[in-house]
Image 1 (spheres, rainbow, N blue to C red):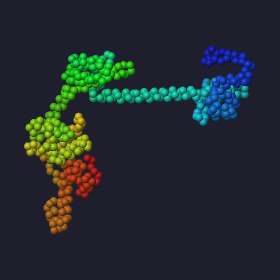
Image 2 (image 1 turned 60 degrees about the vertical axis):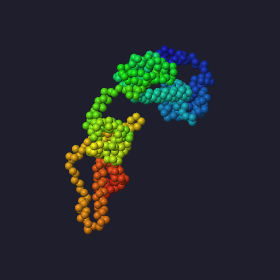
Image 3 (image 1 turned 90 degrees about the vertical axis):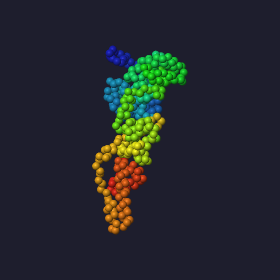
Image 4 (image 1 turned 30 degrees about the vertical axis):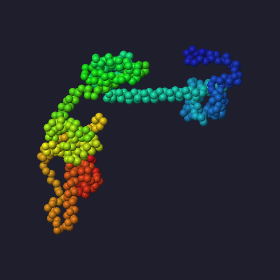
Length: 473
C-alpha cells in the first residue's frame, strides 16, 4: 500500500487501492479526456493506440487523426528528443513542452506521461499552450516596444542635452516654485563668470544687479500665468553688461520649470582680457595684417600694413579698398580672392604692395575667409620679402635659343621657320614666368596667360616643362 509522503512537492492519493473496481472504462476514459486538452493511449513502442481531444481547436488541427502513428513522428525535429526522453523516463519527469507542425503553423503542447500500465501501455496527457504562447508573444512585443521607446527617449534626451550645452545663447532652467536655478548651459556660465556647476541651486535673482531684481521677479511671475510675456531688461550682477531676459513656463513631470534666455545687448559686452592681449599682439606683429569685408574694403589693419602702404595713420587706411595697395591691378588680388572663395585659404602667394608715395615692395600673402554677421570677411597676413628676394643669386636658365643665335639663322633657314623659333622662345619664357609668378599653380598660370587649362598642359608638354597630368593646385 502506498503511503503519503509529507515531504513531497505534490500530493497524490494516499490509498490508491481504494479506487480498485470503482471506475469503469467509460468513466476512466472520460476522466482522462477531461484532465487535459488532448490525451493519447500509447503502446510500449510509443505508437498512438487511441486519442481523446477535449479542445475543439485541436480537432481542427487534425490531432484526432493520429491513431496508428508513432507519437515521436507528430512533433517537430527540435521536439523529438523531448518525446524520446518522455517515453524512456516519463514516469519520473515533469511536464515537457513540444511543438506539433500543422498546416496552420506549429502548435505548442505540454505533455505529462503517466506510469506504465498493462502490456507496457502508457497515457500522455497534453495541455494546449497556444493561448499561453500568444500571451507570451504579446508580452515580448510589448517589452520590445517599451525598450524601443526607451532607446528613442534616451536618444532624444542626448540630442537635446547636446543642443543645450552647445548653444551659444545663455540659457537657465529655473524651478518655478523655489526660483532657484536647476541647470545652466556653458554659455550662461561663461557670461556670468562662474565655473562649471557654480550656478546650480542658486537664487536666479542673484545673477542680476540689485536694482533690477524686483522687475525680473515680476517678469517670472507673469511668465507663470501668460505664455507670451514681453522681455525685461536688466544689468548682470557685478558688471556693467546690460542684457534682455525672457522667460517661458513649461512642465517636466509634475514639476513646473521656467526657461530663462539671456541676450546681451549689442555693444554691452565688456572686452575680455584675452581680447585685449590678442589685439595688442596683432598690432605689434612684424608682418602686416589686414581684415577686409566681402568687397575687400579694409575694416582694420595693423601698423606694419600702414608702413607698407606709406599712409600716415591707420584711420586713413580703414574703409579704403585693399586693391589700392595690394597686387598688380586686375591680376593678383582677383586670383587670391578666387582661391579664397574656392578653397577657404591661400598660403604664400608672391605679389607686390604699391605704396601711396610710389614705393613698391615684394611680398608674400597668406589669407583666410571667415563668416561675419550676414556676410563674409577676409583676413590677410602680408610678409615683406623684398630683402630676401634681392639677396638671392640670379638663377641661370637654359634658354632654347638666344637672340644672337636666331639672327645667325638668316640665310640658313626660311623666315617662317625663324619666326616659329622666335615664337616658341617667347611662348616658353612667358609660361615659365607665369609659373614662377603663381608658385607653380597651373590653374592660376592659365588664367594669367588667357589660356584654357588643357591648352596650357599641351604647351607644357611641347616645351618639356611638364607632363600631361595636371599638377596639384
